[in-house]
Length: 224
View 1 (tube, rainbow, N blue to C red):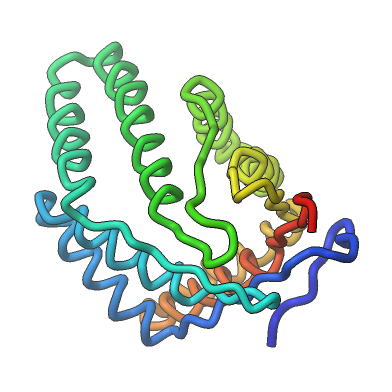
View 2: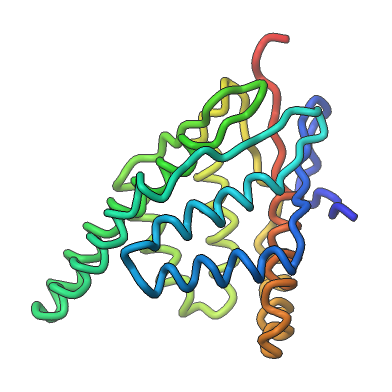
């Protein structure tokens, strides 16, 4: 059953999203991506495969379809570059870590841009992520230090997701995240506690993803 939208209730005329992926699928694709990620060179193909599964598992209540066309060959070099930069930074204590983080942030932003660019909606075309580098770095830093607050990270995550959604160009429509920090927090705690059993990790991941997707709507702002 799709979770009800919480936080501020959306206005009418919005498209609701549902995630239909299963725990078994998450287990298979997660292990596939993990193995390729460990091997580093084929990591891009693992990311492309799990991205294709994630996008394919999203349905829209207005009947529109969504597909992911990305290929591992488009991003495999990014992961090798990040590994190389991280390895080199180890020889420059302190400053090397900062430089590696800044460079890798740029690479991560490029991967996010690639991901959205390869998402195709039947009625809205290709998506575009318009978030800029320095705001992305700023949010990454805030998320990092928010971990030390024990619980504050959840509210930062909610704010970060709203920033991300505001910068998704979806054919003139607006993407909105309705979840709150408190909801992110308690669901995160439950996910971690139940995942202690290890075998439950894929099912808990799907449960968490289902909630996040259910808290996402597309608001029609184009002329009908």
